[in-house]
Length: 356
Image 1 (cartoon, rainbow, N blue to C red):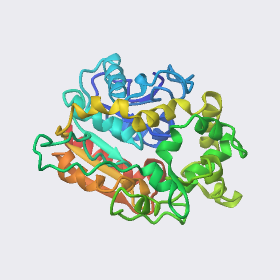
Image 2: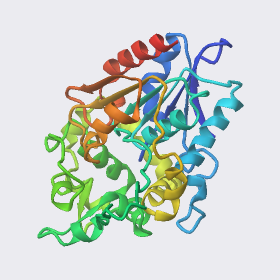
Image 3: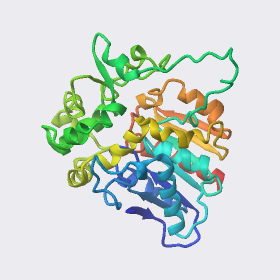
């Protein structure tokens, strides 16, 4: 695993592990690494399996998906902690797809991960197992085919999870007409507070009509790929120059890496999410909770908070038994630790020091 780290010069410091999301890299924690190191921590941010310079980043669609399951990401993280000479760490912090990875780290190995901070993606708990089905009065309501329901809307749509699970997704983004650099610029802009379309609110249910209220980077137009979708929201040259939270030089690190590796390494985890064959291993943990101290941080303008209806309440009321705090930072979108690093750093330090 390729890592960025800070604070390693002085042995014996408490360790914090930072897990990025999609389409990101360890670089997304650049504004936290030195700050937390100066506060007395050994801070480690890996490129997750399949991303950037971590082994396994040369990924093809037809590769085995087993290495990209959530539990294997937990195994990767435990292995990293042990490789660094720790048996436990003060906390694990995850953003976007890194959030469920961090959540499962805390749920499965609370002895290793003594606290958890989730960002932008609430953790509603492990998948449930059908209950009391031996009772003949128990009615099975059936399942929702959200793909078919979205496609049947008057404005046909599709969910980005299922789009990311297709063979075409990597090709679409890697070879988008605007190029990888501008594709990522538009993608990051569209999901940030810089985009005026982001005014999120709770959704009532996991139904096509409710999900279709979200922007098209979540619920895409059926006939369009992600390259085309975000290309419609490409910021102007003036807006790009004014974007201090992600300069063009910083973006170039992301774009050069993704141009080299492609996006398939990150997309494999979405394929695992939508493939029913990988659900049973998670159902083994049905009813289990995260019992270490937990904190949630997101941007107030981040639709990720609400993309799974009910997940935020489930996280606060059931999934995390020691939920210390929930913070929705004003004027921040999905990339909260990059958009508002000062506020995020303050919250991380308060939470982590309290737990150390």
